[in-house]
Amino acid sequence: MRTAFLALLTAAYPLLVYLGLGHFEPRVMAILLAVLALARAVGRRERFWWWAAAAAMVLAMLSWLGNDALPLKLYPVLVNSLLLLVFGASLFHPPSAIERLARLREPNLDAYGVSYTARVTQVWCAFFALNGSIALATCLWASDAQWALYNGLIAYVLMGLLMGGEWLVRRVVRQRAAS
Image 1 (cartoon, rainbow, N blue to C red):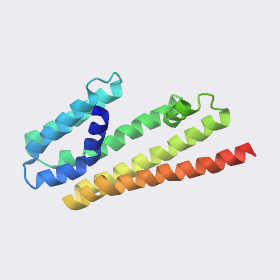
Image 2 (image 1 turned 60 degrees about the vertical axis):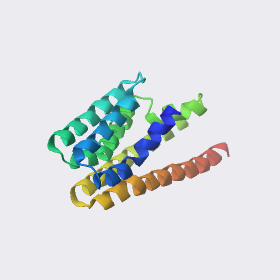
Image 3 (image 1 turned 180 degrees about the vertical axis):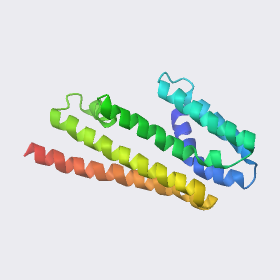
Image 4 (image 1 turned 90 degrees about the vertical axis):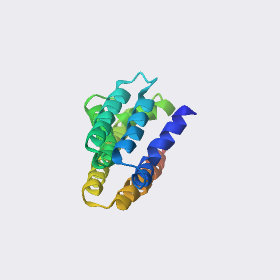
């Protein structure tokens, strides 16, 4: 329940920031980012969550000290950067991120499956790089409403399309492999 609630808050972060900045100073909204970052890390053993929380805390502190909204809006850029780092590193230190996920359902993944999951991990790296770049562009040059629309809706739709597209491709690949 806690994890689902935190995931929902994280997904709603752009909308919450957009709405919050209409009523509160950025330094008050920085508290939201700090609390969310710490809540996501508490109780986790993986270092990733603590590094992510530390980076988010830096953004929150910059927002607090400067009473500036830009560090708050950089959070989606941070998330994409961290995911790019994790997925990219997994390509150099196998198993790849997608292979790890695939092995949860299919522990005896064959060599072709390992190769396929590495390719899908590369596709996700490209997605995180592009999505993070667009998120950065919305921070720097778009209105707050455009920033919230892209980072709070469009980016999730694109992510869903990539997941759905990969699922379809995987079905075709499996059917060809079975023939």
